[in-house]
Length: 292
View 1 (cartoon, rainbow, N blue to C red):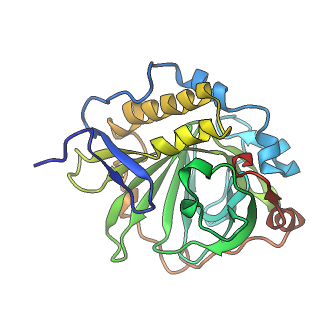
View 2: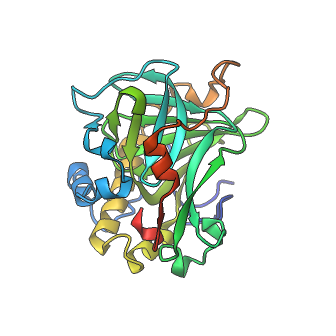
């Protein structure tokens, strides 16, 4: 018997989850009303993005959907930047549909953690966006992660694997549409928008779809990370991801990326670049977690 819609639980990372849909079925709307995708993005893509990234390179970045956006070469190392969180990745493919990149296990990343040393998930929800934070270098643990950014869309898709290499599911991270910069600082810039969707690997073609961290989005409003209108816009983005992308298995779903495995050369762990900008990023800190 299949798990009924509306079932709730806790994810492996400690966030709340709710079963909200299935591939190949009608999508149950999360937001209170439907809105055009572009309108919801405009509500969230505000002028403060440059301050969140705190890097002059952001000012030179170009929207990935622009004809003048730079392309990355296969095998090139890039940075995948979420404001104060910076991750490393190796490009597998980059074309009009989007960017596909691989982060090997053990690759370096710059994280933002509470200044008192706790893991972000250890901070009670009622103060999660209020505590002081600092940048800390860490590494990607567990199996490597294959990540896809469909061009111009406000989400990326992360294909997770179990330790034995079998598919564990796909994580749809709701985030701002990507911007890019080429050269020595080759990067994609985006901002995480708290809400996520998880597509189970079982029941192929009819996979369960779970909404993740709805309670954290509400806390983000209470603690000043988003306005109520912006939080509703995030839910609209999740609805578009579900109805326009997940239900119909649009690219990259169904394209075999859940079964892709790296060769030895592609799976070498990556390091953060030794640049002045990265040194400045390592030194960042803040009074409230809502800042980034």
